[in-house]
Structure formats: C-alpha cells, structure tokens
Amino acid sequence: QSALTQPASVSGSPGQSITISCTGTSSDIGTFSYVSWYHQRPGKAPKLMIFDVNKRPSGVSDRFSGSKSGNTASLTISGLQAEDEADYYCCSYTRSNTWVFGGGTKVTVL
Amino acid sequence: EVQLVESGGGLLQPGGSLRLSCAASGITVSNNYMSWVRQTPGKGLEWVSVIYTGGSTFYAESVTGRFTISRDNSKNTLFLQMNSLRVEDTAVYYCARSPYSGSGSYGFDSWGQGTLVTVSS
Image (cartoon, rainbow over all chains, first blue to last red; front, side, top):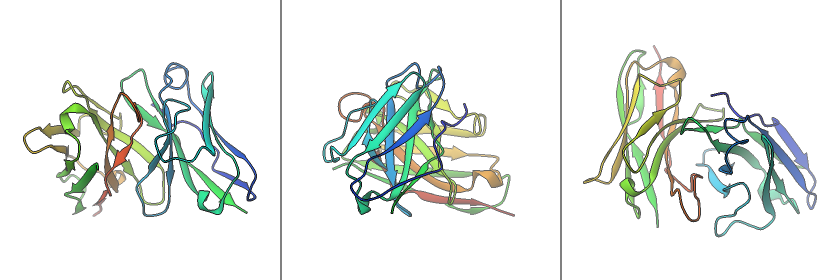
C-alpha cells in the first residue's frame, strides 16, 4: 500500500485560506469516505482535526474543513492563524482493512 | 478522559525482539479498533497494525510476518510484539484508538505519547 500523496509544504499569510490536497487511489480514498486529517507539532502526538472526510471532532475550530472528489481529498484552513503552523497528515481506510497515511505537509504562516 | 500510555521502547541491535505495551484508561480496548502507528524521527506517520473488536488483526506490508498485535482484555492493554527488528524499524511508536462509530469513526481520535524504538548496531 503506497502512501497517499500530499504536497511537502504550503504557506499563507494570516487571514488567508490554504488548501492541502491528498491523492490516493480507488483502493482507499476513491472507495471510502473514511478520510481523516491530523495536525502535529514537533515532539507531540498527532491530533485528529477531521474525520469521515468533512466532520470535525468537538473542540476543533470551524476554520478547518474537509472535502473529497474521486481519489483526492482536501483540507482547507480558513482565516489562517499563527497557531495553525504545523505538519498536517491525511489518512484513509483501505480495501485491505488497513489504513494509509499521506507523507505530510508542512504549513507555514508567513 | 481517554488515556493511552505506551511503554517498552528501547535501544537494540538488528535481529532483536521487543514488546511494546499500551495501557488504556477511560476506554475499553476490546470495544475499539486499536492500532499502532509509527513515525521515523523527522519523517511522516506510518500505520503499522490494527486489532479489531472481533480480534481480527491486520498489518502493513513492511512488518507482516515480523510483528504481532494483541490485547489483554483483563489488563485493558494493547501489545505489539516486534521480532527480527531492522534498522528501518527505528521510530516513535504510538498506539491510537478508532472508535469506528460516532465521533471519530475510522479516524484516530486518541493517541498515546509514543515510545521510541531504536534499532542500531
């Protein structure tokens, strides 16, 4: 199972919106609506930001939203803030009853 | 509050074995999909293994045949037995919970703090 494909880095200015793409295959993102997104700061455990493509756990800001089209999922961060600077990972359930992560995207707030 | 606490990491030589533990509180391990996820220092996340509520287990290709996931319901603890360790298995190993229904669904909504496994000669 190959890793999902994410851009290595995305940047934006405070207040702007950015979108991170996550491309998989028909064996994972294309088949299931079990796409999740994680935020991780150095030395910390990942934190779930989005599950089931576009649902937010309690406590996660509504500035974070998710979507999916075909084999590609996306995470959009609106109203970018300095605290959003971190690594972001997508993840999908697969036809093999396993999970696969993306390679991660470093978000920089300019 | 859900708490997952990993232990058992350490430094060992290639070919060695190690057993990681993940003690859970606030949840019942057997009622959740429990996974191990690892992260090579400075690199990305890699899903390693899962044990489903019914006891079925699945593994990433990179560890199949070498790692075994299990749980002890009486101790509410998840394990990962790692054999024939390789240098490329060096990583921080996290246990993580998927509630599979409700909030979180098939996402990993709870994580431990991780335990470092270093394989080096």
